[in-house]
Length: 152
Image (cartoon, rainbow, N blue to C red; front, side, top):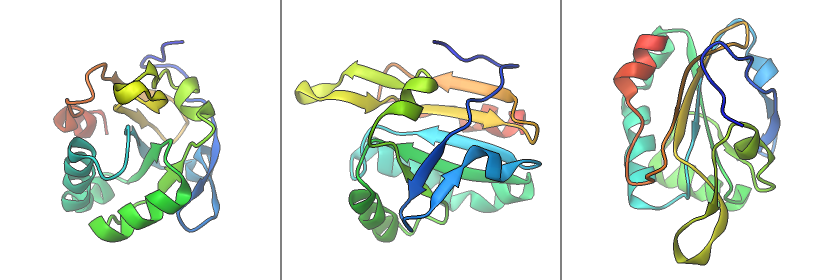
């Protein structure tokens, strides 16, 4: 399934590194930048999420909450968040349901791994409608953050 601009964003509930449930519907009335990333502690993922961290004031100024999702365990994500001082929730999609619902799941990834989140960026407005959708096939690329900001 491919999501596109104008679609209703699939609601979800995932656990954060604080072991609390976080749902998309918790953010009604706010913009959400929803990022999927393959694996914590890898080079491009670290670069991408640290770029968001370093520009978080811009996103806050655009009334946007940033949520980052991977199939890593909560324990791995907790350590990653701590190490990189990331100021936004990291959510574990360990069961891969949300990555799949957003069309952001590799059937086959590197080193024989299966079911890893594709690097993707979605902007969801306060009514739950997608205003930006970018799913990258190449995990070495990062989303176009200028387009993400423009969509906000």
